[in-house]
Length: 442
Ligand SMILES: *[C@@H]1O[C@H](CO)[C@@H](O)[C@H](O)[C@H]1NC(C)=O
Ligand SMILES: *[C@@H]1O[C@H](CO)[C@@H](O)[C@H](O)[C@H]1NC(C)=O
Image (cartoon, rainbow, N blue to C red; front, side, top):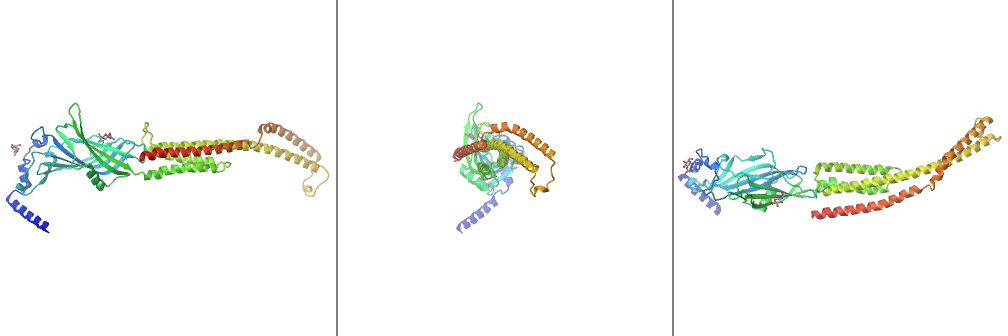
C-alpha cells in the first residue's frame, strides 16, 4: 500500500512538472534538431570524437528451428535480433519534457551499423526490419529485426540420427574495423538460451541445447575486424529414426538368422531371404534421400545399413548354394530310382504277359480281352528292346552316382558351418556398431 501511495505521489509530481514544461514529442524532436531535413545524423557515425569506437550490442533470440537440410548443409531458423548502440547527439533531459524518456523515430533518419551475418545464405526479402527505431533519453538507439535466416552450417552426420550440430552465426560489420565498431552483447549466453527455450515455437525434430557467445577480433591487412559469434548447439530427437530404421533393420537381420531353420527342401527359404534383402534395399533408398553423399566420412547408419545388407546378401548366396546342392542330390537320386523301378516294372509286366500267355486264367484276368499269340510275341520283343535301351542309358549314370546322399550331406554341413560363422559375424558386427556408435554418442 505504501508503495502504491508513493507511486501516486510521484505521478502527481510528474503531472505537476508536465504542466510547466513541453509535453509533446515535437518538443523533443525540435530539441534534437530532427524536424528539419537534417541528414547529418543518418550519414555519420554518431560520435563527437572520431577515435571513440561505437559499441554495437547484438542480442539474438532463436524463435524456431524451421529446417535442417542435410543435403545442402543449411539450417533455416527464425531469429530475432535486437541491436543497440549509443548516439551521442540524441540526448535530452526527461524532466524538461514532461518525463518523456523514450520515443520512436523513422529508421531512415538515423545512422544504422552495417552488421551482417557471415553464414547468411537467405533469399532477399526474408529480413523484416522494424520501420522505426526506439530512442531513449540517454541516446541509446534500439533496432529490432526479425529474420528467417538460412545459414550455411557444416553438419557432421557421422552419428546420425544421434547427432548434435554446432552452427555458427558470425556477426560482423561489412565495412568498419574494430577501431570504429565493436560488437558485444547485453545479455549473456545462459540468459539468451533460457529466453530462447521459453519463446521457441517450432523446433521440428531438434532440441536447442545451448546458445554460446564468443566475441573476438581478427587482424586483417586492412585493420582488425570485430566479430561476434553465436554458436547454436542443437540436438536431434532420434526416436523416429530409431523406429523406422534401426529397429526394422535389426529385425530383418534376426529374421534372416531365423530363416536358417526353415526347411530346405521346399525352396521357401530362398524366396524368404530375397524378400528380406528387398526390404532392406527399400530402407537404403529412404536413407539415400536423407543423407548427403559425403564420401570422406560415411555416417554410422549407412555402415549399419550396408553391413546388414551385405550379411543378408551373403546368406542369400549361401541359401542358393545349399539349394543347388540339394537339387543336385535329389535329381541324381530320383533318376537312379526311376531306372530301377522301370526295370522291375518291365520285369513284372513281362512275367504278367508270360502268365497271360499261358493257359491258366484267373477269374479277374478273364475279363480282359484275350491277346492273340503273335501280338504277345511282338509286345515281348518291343519290351525287350526298350529294356536293353533303358539299361544302356541308365548304366553310366548308375556308375557316376556313387552314394546317393552325398550332396545332401555336404549341403547340410555347409549350412551348419555357415550358420555358426554367420551368427558369430552378426554378433561381432552388432558389438562393433554398438561400441563405435553408442560410445561416440556418450
Ligand atoms: C540544426 O540543424 C541546422 C541545419 O541542419 C543547424 O543549422 C543547427 O545549428 C542545428 N541545431 C542544433 C541545435 O544542432
Ligand atoms: C564456430 O566458430 C568458432 C569460433 O570462431 C570456431 O572455433 C568453430 O570452428 C566454428 N564452428 C563451425 C562449425 O564453423
